[in-house]
Image 1 (cartoon, rainbow, N blue to C red):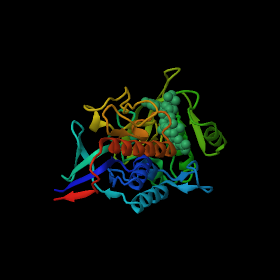
Image 2 (image 1 turned 45 degrees about the vertical axis):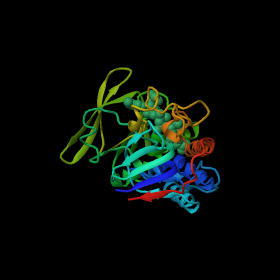
Image 3 (image 1 turned 90 degrees about the vertical axis):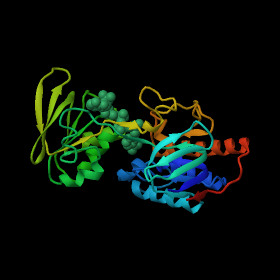
Image 4 (image 1 turned 180 degrees about the horizontal axis):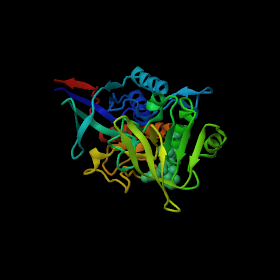
Amino acid sequence: MTTHTTRMLIIGSGPAGLSAAIYGARAGMHPIVVQGLQPGGQLTITTDVENYPGFRDVIQGPWLMQEMQAQAEHVGTRMLWDTIVSVDVSSYPFRAIGDSGDIYEGDTLVIATGAQAKWLGVPGEQELSGKGVSACATCDGFFYRGKKVVVIGGGNTAVEEALYLTNHSQDVTLIHRRDTLRAERILQDRLAAHPHINVLWNQAVDHFIGDATGLTGVALIDTVTGARSVEPTQGAFVAIGHAPATELFQETLELDGNGYIIVEPGTPKTAIPGVFACGDVMDHTYRQAVTAAGTGCMAALDAERFVAARGFAAAQATERV
Ligand code: NDP
């Protein structure tokens, strides 16, 4: 068991956590980033990124995160491979315990744990997960090459997943519970123009149907008429949004009705001085890589000011066994 100490402990390694690390390292905070279960965050399970400023050509999400991590390390961040299982913010320094048994102590704490895909919670979904039901087309779409697939949802994610799946399948159906999409107009236009995508409007998933081979269909209910039907498919991608990863903070920080960390408006400051939240874990409105990076930067600047105001000793990141 090792105890790691730092002026800035960052939990999470998506754009928010790594941007905080870059700014924190350059300010002499000797940050430690504990990477978590999905190092690099949600961008590592996407492909094309067209809206991160600075790149004229389309870039790949996993590549962008590798570059961000390399930049963070280059300026002095220590990246540690562990998953935090408990956090104590009741006294200074803040203290977190990893799955490995290691202890992490930070004069400041930056929470950048992000968000995860939501599931429908209908019968058959869990049982058929990995056997035809998935929440990530870019991870699993390849397995359904040449097969009929469906995507459930009406936001940007659902439309992007449907478009992406046309790389593998010529028979993609988007199933949405209303008659209008929430996705951006440009994506809606691409969807409507695509010859291999069909949309089923006003359809809610009642349950997933499967047999020993895996998923065989999706049972639907018309949200207007109540009529029932079955859409045969071997691959169903649930793309209905995300839930913030805040289980660790339920008892200690103020969360909103959807579980997002509440911060002082316009800042990354939580109610506990020295504890900051940035990225998707506190932002249910914008949820973009670039906004996550922006709030990560803000968290680092505020953490630096907090340390300066309290006059903490200028300790380097250290380790003791
Ligand atoms: P959203 O919350 O935007 O959309 C979720 C969709 O799922 C909605 O259409 C919603 O329906 C539907 N839905 C939710 N719950 C259920 C349910 N229980 N049963 C059936 N349908 C359900 O989530 P996204 O993941 O699409 O996007 C999240 C954020 O990330 C957004 O801000 C989006 O703009 C952004 N994003 C941006 C991208 C980009 O810029 N390239 C790519 C992907 C996401 P309803 O419309 O009826 O509420």
